[in-house]
Image (cartoon, rainbow, N blue to C red; front, side, top):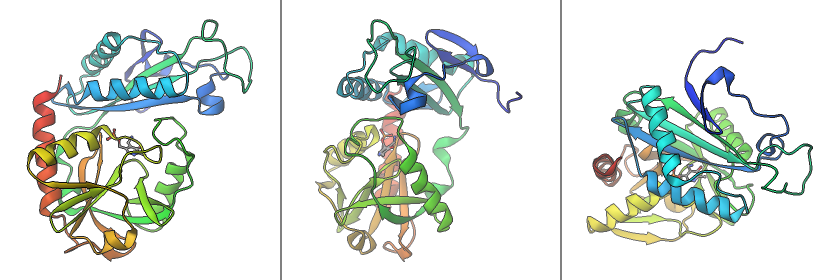
Length: 291
Ligand code: PMP
C-alpha cells in the first residue's frame, strides 16, 4: 500500500511510520465508535491551549467510564515529540483514545485491567494555517436538523452525522451546516456558532446539547476582557439572518466569519469587524500562551 504522506505517528507508547501503525479489527473505536478525541492546533511549532484540551479529554474519558491510559505529562511529551519528528510549524495534532480491543465483539465494556485502551496521535501539517484566505471572505452555511445523540458535550469519535452534514452543505454549494433543534441553533457540524447584534455577541449556553469548545471558552474570555458584551443563549436561524455578523470558532479554524445563512446575507454579506477583531485577539493571545 503506498501512501501520499510518511508521517511518524504515535500508537500505544511507540513512535512508528504511519504505514506500520496497526490497530486490531476488534478495537471498540472501530466497531462501536467507543472512543474520544481531541484536536490541538500548532502555530510556530507550539501547542495552543494544550491544557484546555487535556482537561476536556479527561472529562470525556470520565463521562464514559474510560480509564485515562496516559498521564498529562506524557501526553504533552507525545504531542511535542510528534511536532519535532514531523517538523510541524503550523498544523494540528489529532489524539484519539478508544476502549481498546477485547478478544471478541460485545456490547458490555471489557474489564480495563484486561483490555488496555488504544491511544493514537498523529500530526496534520497546515502551513500558514492562521493566514487562511477564507477568513477574508467568510463562510456560507445552511441549516439542517440536529440528529445527533444527546451527549454532545462528550467529544466522541461518533462523527457520522456531522460528516453527513458537511456533505449536505457541499451538495448545497456552501461551506458548512448549522444544526437546529427545537427551532434554535445548537452549533456547527464541527464548531461553535455565534451571532453579533448591536455589538452584543450571542452564543448558545453550555449544556449536554453542545460541545464545550476550548476555543469558545478562550474567545468569550477575551471578548469580556475587551469589554464586549456577551450573552449565552440559544438563537434562531431567522435571528442569525437578521444579525449584524455571524461567526464560528474551533481549534483549527480559530474565529471564522459566517456571511450567509440559508441563502440570506448576514449583515453586509462580508466579514464583520467583531469577528475580525476576535480572530486577531485570539491568535495573538493564543500564540503568546502557546507551549
Ligand atoms: N462543536 C463541535 C461539534 C465540534 O466538533 C468542535 C470541534 N471539535 C467544536 C464545537 C469546537 O471545539 P474546539 O474549540 O474545542 O475545537
